[in-house]
Image 1 (tube, helix red, strand yellow):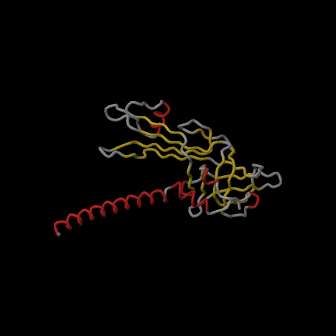
Image 2 (image 1 turned 90 degrees about the vertical axis):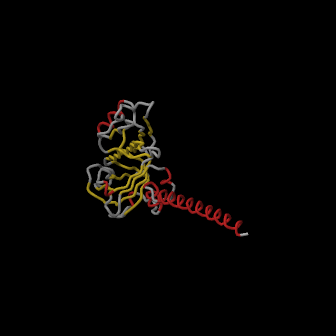
Image 3 (image 1 turned 135 degrees about the vertical axis):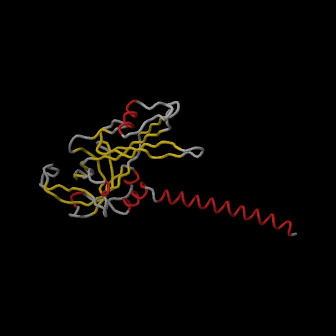
Length: 237
């Protein structure tokens, strides 16, 4: 009888180890998903109702959903060559031996101040400020890759070199590299959170007032910007 029970116990313990291992992997996957940059931004946005620009109080932290226009000349994104007011580029290289994984080799964010129009009212978004005062998530809708049998285009090679990187290794073989870019284009609808400040302005956004609403952030109440459509699903306050 004991000869039968012992193998059964070992088998049961084996199943238990497998189940615990699977649960641990699932827990880490959930934590990574829940606390991802994107989902932290979407959760923060969902907690605050949107508001009409003219109803914003001075120094109020608010949400605005609207379409983008420029104040001055737009940026041109480095990968997709698109006119925009903000771009994010992520370039990753696959490294390692048997268990290769992707490593970020270029992480570039660049933005300029721009205008958002909502319900016929306009505000100025101060997106050119320090990275410490803002959180930005943009949908990466431009995707390229290069590798063993796939040479990068000339402008991708130039972009890598401008950041001190190269598409080939020691023996001239192409590295496995993927390129991702997201932008805020002119006329695109976005969602933002920020602190509103009414200031004297030369931009004439409101013909009835010399003041314009400026949206910004600081280290505590950050300027949050996203073009993810999910952020626009919440109801207006």
